[in-house]
Image (cartoon, rainbow, N blue to C red; front, side, top):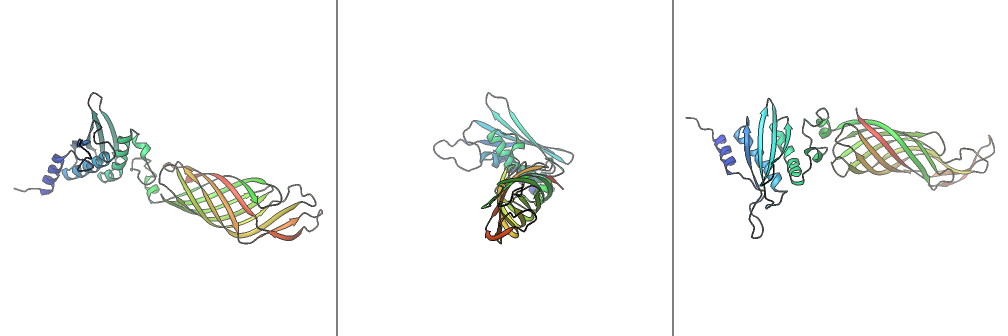
Length: 312
């Protein structure tokens, strides 16, 4: 007679549930939130035991041990797909259930912390998504790319000014970007220009660090840039003063990116360009005369851009 020890061990583990997040409760009240296996259809005993342990651990680590609720974890197969359901049972109330579709049993490890958060807070499962914890059925086409990295391109508008300038104060222009993003980092290139004065045009090599991996993520970044700029008056009046420069430099930036778990996202960013050389400080001459630029000034172009990015 053959004995499958792993199946026996799995069955014993299932029978020992409810599972709890800690072995003891503090104080005199030792009532613990109860979580146990429910129906397991088409799932092997050892896989079921591990799945229930992960989900119950995620739930009981987040809920009060004496909240009056118990939890049941059901799993079933539909072809290759696994359906994982958590039922919240409370005396005198209708049961609440929360289900998630998994492409394979291994995705329980990804889904369990999100199920624990959803059950504990009452949020929908979808609202617990981050860039790096999507299951395959969520946004099926792009889920793997978001975890492993994805190429994005797009463009938008910017407003700009030149600090320590002499002439026109504010301007606006267009910006285009290409970026390769992973959950915590992004790198790419961008180009920008505006036609009216104050004038600014250039390109940059960009990098940024995201401070979380949720749908809305603030970031800080920087890079190298070649920028030409001038705050000459558009009317070119004799005697007008302005600064002008074209220089390699660095830039620092900060902002946020929204809708990161979707195919497209929105970025709002502020940049300050730091040229490696000072700008010429000039005075507008007569028509067709050479302008007089006897002095220099360290001028700093600043922009705020809003861009819309799409997957490549």
